[in-house]
Structures are given as structure tokens and as C-alpha cells.
Length: 422
Image 1 (tube, rainbow, N blue to C red):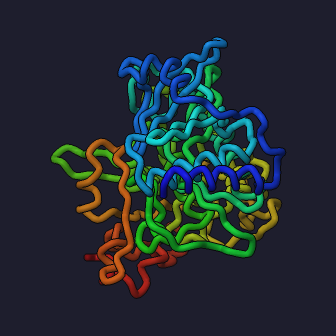
Image 2 (cartoon, rainbow, N blue to C red; image 1 turned 180 degrees about the horizontal axis):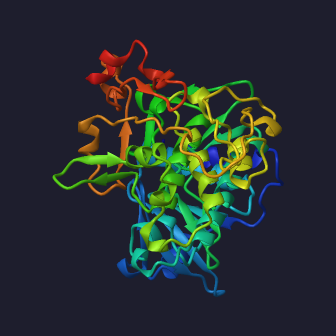
């Protein structure tokens, strides 16, 4: 895709706004000279982040406003498409917890996107990066980040038409402003879901550790993929563990594998990041873990919608409070918010029979690609060897739930174990 194609895409973006909010009128076109001056010539000292296609720089405009500028590394068809998609979507959607578009620049061999600058960088930087040792993310901030990020996703999935699937929910794509308010960012992989369409099949893009099974294996993308990624993010925020951790001896373990035994034993406080020094709200913790366990179910139709997840996190849904409701069996969901989980309420304290987290395992060759827990992996469909492309997950064993000795399988195991063993 050349410059003309990109400009065509961006022109169409102005003509076909996504409904749900008024189109933004605050963004503008920038010149390359203007952005180069703002970033001190895109100096290394101004660099604040780097992704698969671009490097992000801090900038200062002549009027004193701080900005963040993403400069594409190379101009090719993939980078052009990500650039066009991100500009189009950011220029349309308006939500207080979505990163705002300030403008863009298209030159003969340059593509740049201008955003609001976030002084506290990303959630990743405070959980695992350069600010992790500062321990500035107390429990109150973490819960606020969780709920506000859920509200942003609920808006994308339910309040705009067509609905938007983010496809790359992760800690480094949740940015934090000066008050630690979260803003979901990076829409380069986003997909618009036409009305009446439940899912699409597409090239797999995303970050290891966050990918939903049906998406990683077959490229089937739906809103449920974002829900799965958000469930992993919930566990990450609560525990401080990366989605994939390297164990002594070189083995690797996902955060879901690590959390499941603690959840099964009812040891929820042991899930909490040690940096919080035991300061957390047990009721909020139970709600978050309950929501996370529901989100990471292997079968997409066993996951809640983001609207239902938000209701659970806020404690506004029927049976959403896992402290009062210990009977959390897997079930299909009603579309009505008032019946998110139709299980009877049982009085008492925190129970040991909460929903189990399904142990979905990545294949070893995929884990080998993840050197630091933040490596992105892109998979391309092969016409002749589809199973080699989409066999991202290893075989998942049949498991037993904590109730009635009922046998429970990871949904995609049925008739496919040989296919997945690779």
C-alpha cells in the first residue's frame, strides 16, 4: 500500500464516522518539520517506547503542549495498514479512557501519529519496567485502572457501531496520565465487526501470553478474544506476574497456570502482588479474580461480554459477588446485565470452590520466542500447512471441576488433541 492508498483510507475515515459519539474535531495534520523540531530531531533521549512497527518519542510543541509521536520504522504494506487503521479509529471514537488522537503526518517516506503525552507512561512500566521499583501502584490505583480499562473496552464492544475489536489488549497498551487514570491505546491491530457478524477469520497478530486459544490457533477473532486478553491482564495487575514468567531452570509458566492452584485452594491473598504488602480489599480482590477466571475460559461462548465483566467488577450484577456466592459453575450467559451469572446466592465468607482457571498451555516453540514476556508474535496463514501456523497452543488435558466431581474439558480439546500436539 503506497502513500496514495493511505491518504485514500484516511479521507474515507472523515466521511464514514463510527456512531456512538460525535467525531473528534481536535486533531489536525502536522508537518514532518514540525514534529522533528518537537522531538529534538527524534533523538534517542526523547524515545519513550518501541513497538513492532514504530518508535514513540516525547515531543514539545511551540505552544507548550506535550505530545507523543509514533514514527513508523519502515514503510511497507503491513505498516501502512496499521497506520491507516489506527488513525481512522482514533479519529472517530471518543471515550475518556481511550487515548486521544492529536493528528498525523503523511510524507513521501514518513508516517507519524501524534497522541496526547502520558507522563506516567504505561501500566507495563509500573508493573515490570523502569518504574516497577518505585511501587507507585497501590491497590486503589490498580482497581481504578481495572474498572476504567473495562469501561473503555465495554464502549468499543457495545457503544459504537460497528463494534470494534482491539486485538492487542496488554499492559503496555494501557497508558497512564498524571493522575494514573488509564487510557487504552494502540489500535493498529483493531478490527471493525459488522452488524450481525459474530466473528471473522484473519491473520493472527498479538502478544504471547494474551492470545485467546481460538484466535491463536485458527485466526478466529471476536469480541471474546479481547475478553480473554483482559482476563489475563486482570491476573497480571493483581499479582504483578508477567503473562509468561521464566522459572528457575529455564521453563516457562503462564500467569493462568500459576494462579489456578492458588484459586483452587481458596488462597486468594496469595495471588496479590507482594509489593502491596498485604494492603488490599478482599471483596474487590474476589470480584477481580472471579471475573478473570470467567474471562479466560477456553471456549469463547463460555466467556462473559465486557458489559458483564464490568458489572461483576463493580459488584452490580446478580450473583456478581463471589464472597456471597460460592456456587460458580460454568454456564451460558443471558444477554441481560441483571443475570450475568444465574447461580443461587449462598451466604458466608470467601469460599474455596471458586471458578477454576483453565490451564491453556502454549507450545514450547512459541514460548521459546518470548524472551522477555513482552515479545510480539505475528502468525500468517499457510494454505498448505494451516495446522503448523495456528497450532500455537499445546494439548490441553481433561480436567475436573471442584464441584460434584463433574468432568470439565478445555473446550477446544474435543477431537483436536492430536492436532494440537504438533
